[in-house]
Length: 116
Image (cartoon, rainbow, N blue to C red; front, side, top):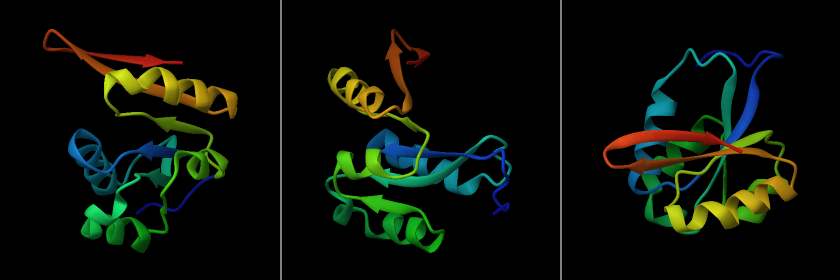
């Protein structure tokens, strides 16, 4: 893993299962992220993913049980790979906590990334 630089932006990820879990594993495999550094994740059922939680903790990545704990951590931004019906409530809470966030939606086989 590359050492953090002053240009790294600490960010959080919501979820460890399904699409979010796959995304988390891909992030852990990457070593050359220039602007982002995963520092925290939230999943209310983190105990269901012991191997992934262990990998995260070994790398010094905090795992939070509540979304509010994640928002209170020193992240600057977060990614919300959550079901579409949760995008609005999660985004509103993130913005109220002065965090940048993005939510990814799939429509008709295409991907769309929206930054809010």
